[in-house]
Image 1 (spheres, rainbow, N blue to C red):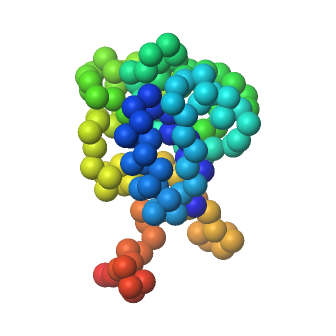
Image 2 (spheres, helix red, strand yellow):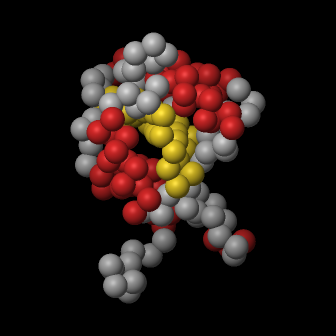
Length: 147
């Protein structure tokens, strides 16, 4: 289970991710703007932050830069989200420290896959440490391992 911070000024995105991410076993906190998100990030260690690029006031790229420059938050992995994907947005996001940029609207399954790429699985077994969530065997809804 990962602790994920979602920062987005569009309430339906916050609502959807508050439902989707816990289904996948993640703990979710949300913020409706950049300053609120930065306050939450300073108080709680998050594994990953999903940040909207285009927000009024403090935009997502500035939030990402702030997270990366703060010793208390610089280890959080950042995925940016944008409704206006472009080469410039990708470049600016990567320079700010983001690992990837997701175009909105997105399929929930693609977002889950992208998150899995960037969140290491935690395990009591040292042999499993650092293994990505996506490397775990796939299970059916009944809990059976799939081939």
